Image 1 (tube, one colour):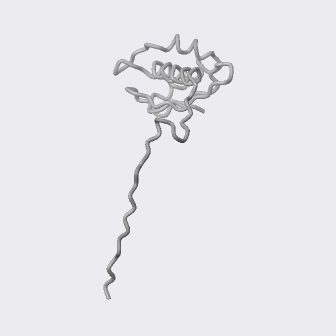
Image 2 (cartoon, rainbow, N blue to C red):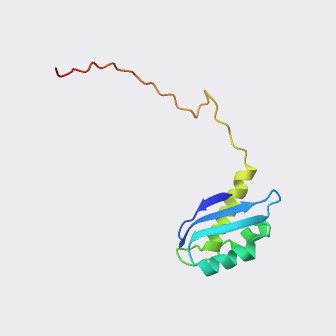
Image 3 (cartoon, rainbow, N blue to C red):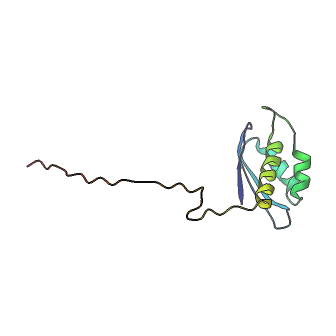
Length: 112
């Protein structure tokens, strides 16, 4: 299952699953208009994500976006994450910051 945090809609999050052939297998919205989002799920589950992206991109409600538009953005982000290889960060890799930590020994005074 994948998760996408929405921006500008009543729904707060989209949770979805795509199979190895790029077909949407499951879709749930957290928050938002229950009836409309259940219909959106029923209309999109079983369809290729490319088709869903094409149909849902650019649909506007408020804040210049909508739940269908956010679904298209979520699927585009998912697609992009599958196409671009993830660079491994290994020990000594330039992206790994080295921290120089000085250890200071402190003597504690005990009240006697």
